[in-house]
Image (cartoon, rainbow, N blue to C red; front, side):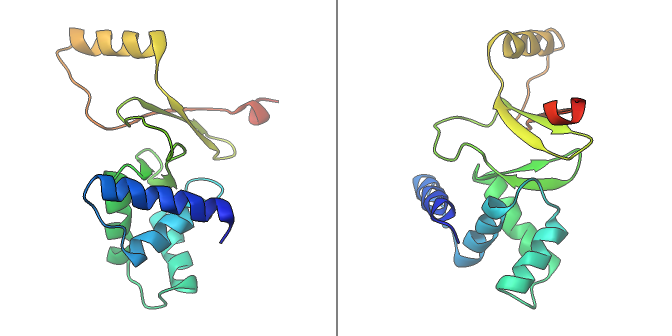
Length: 151
């Protein structure tokens, strides 16, 4: 495990402690898998990695419970449109996840996490207010093509 992943795991443990939550050894292992990956992965990809590294007999509920915990704690995100998971890209930042915007490349699968701010957030909130609708914690996903795939 790299020094960067270890540092991020310590931040994740601190975030859990601040919320009165516990990052158990198994949750920590799943968080490490998320931090080590290049992009979003399915629960079954993560289950395979968990089985290969730590728990050969792990079953699907094991990975789903850990992922549900990490998402609820704000340490990871679930991309609803692709049913894949990734570690929060801003663990050390003091930000909420109600204004998270994910830019998903439909060609290469790259995902970029960006805070939703400024006029875009104001326009979205205004539009939703006109519809008498309040957004929950679900992040917004926008699909398209990243800079590399546009070339």
